[in-house]
Length: 121
Image (cartoon, rainbow, N blue to C red; front, side, top):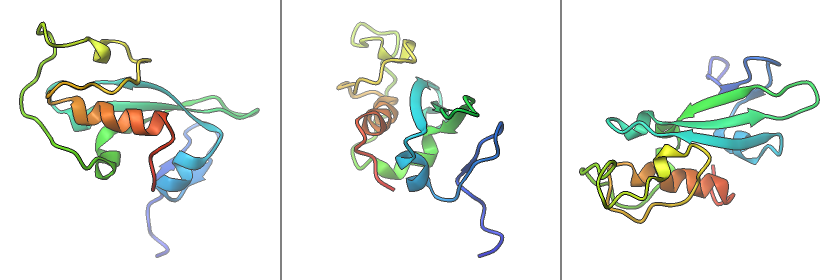
């Protein structure tokens, strides 16, 4: 399709990734952070850097664009701010999987998959 929208385009250098798999497998695309959205976890942001000699811009992608990579359970309860919460979501550079049955757990698992290069197209 000629009018098919690419997965992402770098706002600085104009590099285009037509597919998510190409974006995730590009060695110049580095995972740099995760910003949780506690009310709507699929609106959380996974932060990447387009790291080349000519570019170094950040690219933010909503967790929802990777949601199909997760095949586990979704939980309704938000544990953030409770004694059960390890606080991982407060550190945008922490990519650890959260073992809690929390509303945001699926998003953290997606980030963990990407971080460990286990994500596939």
